[in-house]
Length: 543
Image (cartoon, rainbow, N blue to C red; front, side):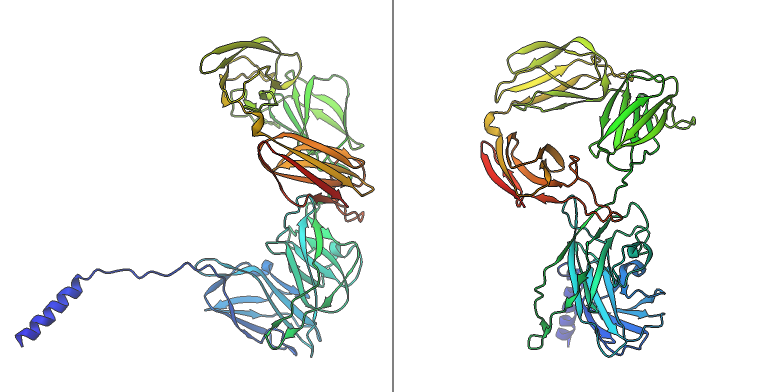
């Protein structure tokens, strides 16, 4: 008996000393909820039950169903959506139309409870009649300018081909584009449909705001029969119909509207327009002040840098794209004193270097504000062995960029120094000591691109070379032409052409009211990888 007690004691002792290990949870869940059961079943006919129950394989949340659950034809009243455990309960409040197929599309709103994995698209349909509509339309939305996927657009179908419908009437069918820009209508009635896409800012399914992006097709599109089900494999036969392509754009006003001008700091005036402008003139009404004018890269904002401090209100006539406005420009006042300006926090003139170490472009100074003329100023160039002293001047003009007259030897290291307080802006600010260190590049560090544009279209085209988001070169082509892009840094480049329909030298968005699609942009089939000390020869056939 003593041996038995001793044995029990030892077992208890060992078990009390055992190390406690927290069980692991296994691999991270990366899959969205999966539907297990639908009541009534999906694609039911003779539907009369106002309550729908959909059960998933895990706990989930429903994100903003009033915006992200799309019903076609649209309900007059929003259903009640409730979650109970792993089941979504939908209570329909409307009196359903007879012999009608309804479609419910859940767009990115069902996600699992713990990891927030979203179910991108879930479709539930039913018919109040004895048959379920079995036609379909599918397509893809792309930004007309960038060709990127246009996501979270409402895509709408109308049974009647009336231009005013998207402005006045809710659609007969509605769905939403997903992350890759694709959209799909299933279980719709046979027929031809007007199709319209909308970035619906105020969530009313109407195109009633000027800044809402849109897309449309010029003519109605015919729905086609949905693929049959392969009963042996219990899966749909592959859909062979091509996607429709719609190109989204924000419509611009035909008449540019001058917005309230900004005077952010002493000597700077910014004049924003509602739309890009391509023809701009200024006429003074009486006294005027010297200024330096720049245009924003988006072509919708004019900036003035004044050479003198404005003391009196001046009047001008601005004419943009043929439309004129009378503008009164007032002396600068800080915000808080009843003015339209805001004091900037900087107390120095900002100066930056560009073309650093470039073999074929001069080292250049870039000023945040036009600078006053300088008769002569020193530049110090340090190498490992020598100090080179040279001078330069600033002409009596509105200078915002200043190339420096310096020559550099390949592969040699340099430090360029300009003392402080050399340059003074017309705003009364100056700079600290300027310094740039670099190694001069060699010819072998650049590549070249020879692009042959083979033009087979009647329109003028604009050829563009891009590096990332930066436009490097733009050329207007009226006929086939070969362009040599020289001395490019190694990297990835894109080439595109714009079909300049109205020959105004710029890309123009569409206009739904005038039935104009955006001007077509065609990108070269592949991105171009420029390699150092290499010539790339390509041909761009413009259809």
